[in-house]
Length: 253
Image (cartoon, rainbow, N blue to C red; front, top):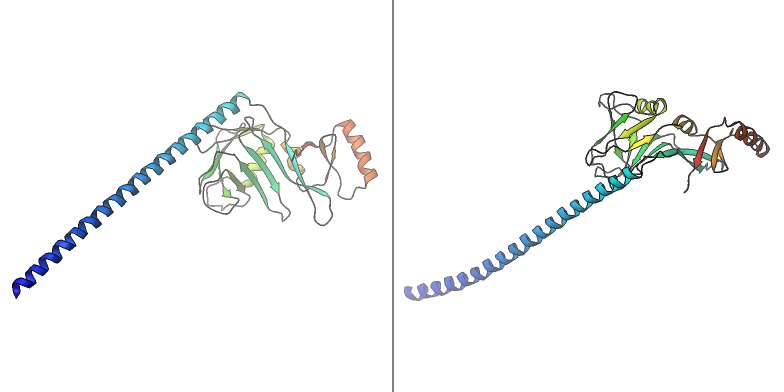
């Protein structure tokens, strides 16, 4: 009787051995497919990174070849209570056209400076290195993401409030530097390129934040909050002729 059980056990072992071979073969095929797909995805990611790097290089080269000083631009918004046009931001584009700095004073009173460099994302938890032409050394500025996330983004901002123990340059020092210098440059996180921004006219531009403005001949002019239309007309005629009123180009958008 024992030999019967032995034969049965042998048959079962052979069956399971064949099944295990089949399962092992299937597992090997699945693993091979997964490895090949993973390698393909990795190659595609590497190629995409190379393409982005090449595009950035081309953008930098094109920017350098067509660089010229830009004008400050005002961004007025209609006040929800008075309906008047109030400047909530002023911006300047870098000479090479790669980046834009936007100094904002929002309706809530929050102050910040936006840094927008399409195609050149700043990594999460990174900072911004900036250099004024009148300073010997560069400065480090804290960066935050507009979305509140910690991922890489090409649309970030310099907050007005930083920890006194962070080691970052204060926001006030940065904005004061914009007024007393002629140029500021910021370092892109990819490589060693420094887009440069013209600061001539920044004092007039920054003084317009939170002020009422009216448009006249492709320029914005500051006017008192309580000025009537006849008074505004008189101010424009006098100040345009004398060219002593802060002026700034109208936002094309």
